[in-house]
Image 1: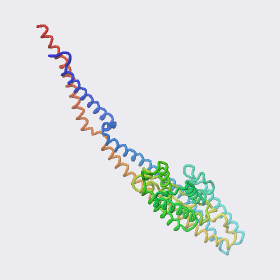
Image 2: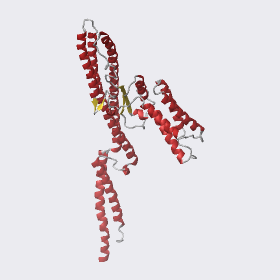
Image 3: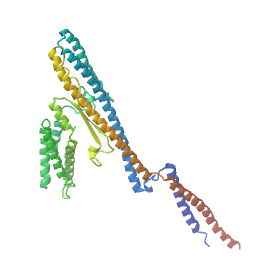
Image 4: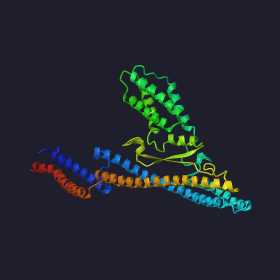
Length: 412
């Protein structure tokens, strides 16, 4: 019998420690409702659930962005609806003025209302805003407009800046003929894009497709070979990244792209127009579809009396009145087309919100299965550990009293 080292007590103490730790973990899981409270609980599960939480929170904001987009579009469409009503009234006045039963005096009275209605169109266009941003008239103050893109030569300037900056690097990539040729072709194609900004949109589409092909060739040589210097590697990677950004930011979707918008601005001699982006996905450049699966671009031309040709119209004379009838017919049709386009955007966003909501709660369900505590299972585990802790405590007390039996040997 030994009294210096009570091995039985040591074994029991260790068992008590383990049971107490297990009970503490069960208490933590039951009190927080989470099966994984720290990485040591389930390293892989933590990584998966945190990624899902990132997506869930991103989806929540994407849904809010979509709802805000609908609100903004509804405000714009409401303004256009009233402008359409005004132009319908102006067309009635023009038809009345075109009738030869009226004298010049009556036509002047009709024109007074016609001109006041034109002023009201201007007022509505200037004051229709969402969150302080103008929704209909961007030529007055582009800095406060909703996603204004500036003047019609902005795209050309931006592309020229990119071209000149890349060309100034003087890169030859002479060590690799395929890379060097693809790089030279990419610069030449970029110049073609610059030359066709105000030309045929089909030519610029073809140039964009060409540029994407050259970029794919360059991306096929990533990562750079080991025998390249660190400087050359970094330079090559940055050049490829920049060209890839230029190609993809102007590639798809072609419909309503900035290229199309600027072409229409030049064709119609517009000074400014709107193109704004709603971020309706939880990511940006990552995930299936990349950027374009997470963004929605909305474009429509700036509207004010000048841009729709009403600022110079009057119905003081019969000829002017008949001309105004034809012009208003065209403008009403055009504005109705813009309203219809806004309606398609709103409908699309409604479906987007439904899809995001489905993704959000299904992803939340998946995250819950990984992260949340199963109370039935954990309560059973807690009860078991609680009993074991009480048992181990009792046994430790017994183990501590065992060395006292050595006193019987001494007393005898």
